[in-house]
Image (tube, rainbow, N blue to C red; front, top):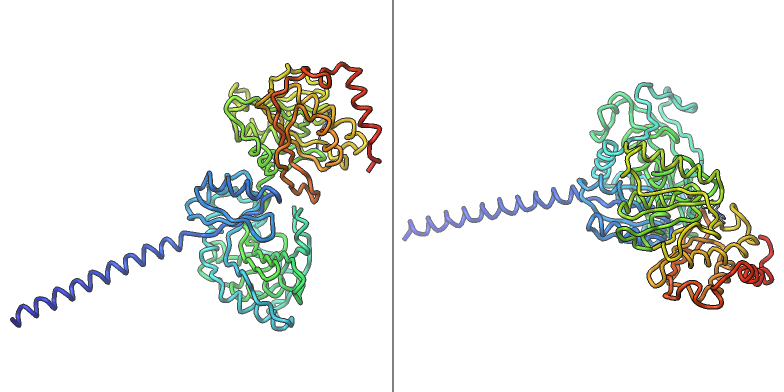
Length: 500
Ligand SMILES: C[S@@+](CC[C@H](N)C(=O)[O-])C[C@H]1O[C@@H](n2cnc3c(N)ncnc32)[C@H](O)[C@@H]1O
């Protein structure tokens, strides 16, 4: 009896220890998972957030969410997917989130806020984000400002004998076009203690401490501090924590402090230059960001063997983006300006060179022509999709010219576009001219919901039109001979706007 009880106890103990081992193992696996999952944030063209969310879902299989202040999305990835994130076409700038505070309680006085920045810096979970930053450096072609061969020049105001000094300067965040950001800025300070770097620093950092800057974007009225104040104080705390060296221009690490009312996001930048610059090397006066071009192209859902035309291509941002991403469609680009056509050709050549397929028939399914959109050298009903960025009448053309140009454009587009299935995605900020022109075209184009986007600070419409089944030339209104067309354009002229 005693022996049986002893045996039972032993069995129970063994079971308990197996259970413990299993729990520990599970915990370790879970910890591993947690360690590998990070939140990536990205700036996207304002207005195309949902399109970016869709792309993330399609290509990474993960759900992204749009930030409260527009123009940003967030999504979780495992670190092995970081490379794929760089290949997404909707994203401008990338960053890895250290921590998000949905409702940060800012104190009422500057002194209290400043002391909170110090506490905050010390309690943030930096490790994962810094690991991602390191991994990212090995992935991207790092356009680092850091010159590893030179020993860092001491800051002008840095005084080693004192061991502590601060410099705070302001500069505009390069490439910032978002109007929602009320004040943008940056900066940091100096304090040097030798070689106390944490294990987070890379081997090179053992010789020279990492250089960093803090960039603060702030929007909201209920703050007793400016973005400069926040950047300076938070930057000081970060410096104290890691013993990094502040450098506004030649930084290795850019810490982002994004404050929107009571929401605070602290992150580390993963891109030095926006990803929207991917295709263009020869810029024109109104070159469109590749991310906006991608958003416009997504709206028309290109299909295999579609003939897609940008009849006002400028430097070619739209058709180039299309030919790179939808290689099974054919892209035709044209412009009436010879310089613009040359720019497009140069951009195509550069891409072909970069992708080492110059001279190959299968290089890019794209051609560039000089033409007048009002008189296209193309057969009627031969085009599946038209995607173009029209002159806004500000930097390019004028509102007065648009009043005449837009109806002619829509008419000629209706002629070449396939009735019943054809689509047009047209970007313009000149809503008045566009709406008037469209009213005159009612029989040929059906307007679908418009997407409003931010183009260099301007609120512009991406007008999605569907070609109706009406055959061009079948009605008295569109059986246009030159005289009729003239009269038609004069009609518009009479009610035309004043030159903007
Ligand atoms: C807003 S820009 C396009 C910019 C272009 N998306 C880019 O990325 O460079 C408009 C273009 O329309 C062209 N354009 C104006 N009237 C035209 C016409 N009648 N036919 C063809 N192109 C025209 C201009 O030369 C200009 O390059």
